[in-house]
Image 1 (cartoon, rainbow, N blue to C red):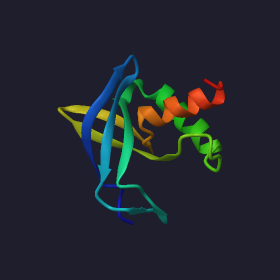
Image 2 (image 1 turned 60 degrees about the horizontal axis):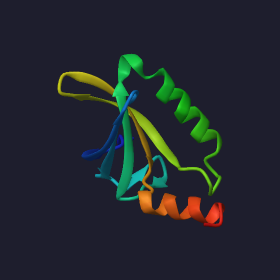
Image 3 (image 1 turned 90 degrees about the vertical axis):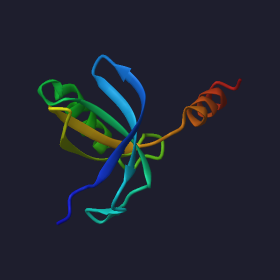
Image 4 (image 1 turned 180 degrees about the vertical axis):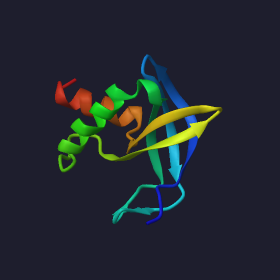
Length: 107
């Protein structure tokens, strides 16, 4: 089986648990699922990845909900001599989230 291939793009935000970046897929089919060409990538140091692993488990429990950001999987990478745990997520532009929020509160 071919592994998930992606390339890290622009960093969107850095937080207490790691960084959120854009990622582009290099192979569109992974484990029978067609992946979008652009995804969100959440990464943190592998030694501090328990919280991100728990987030992945929760997202996968709701994988069929249209109201939850989709989780496409996780993997480990080695960047700049650091082992990283990576969570690949559906990319939702900030403007789209703002529109959903405003619509839900009738602004």
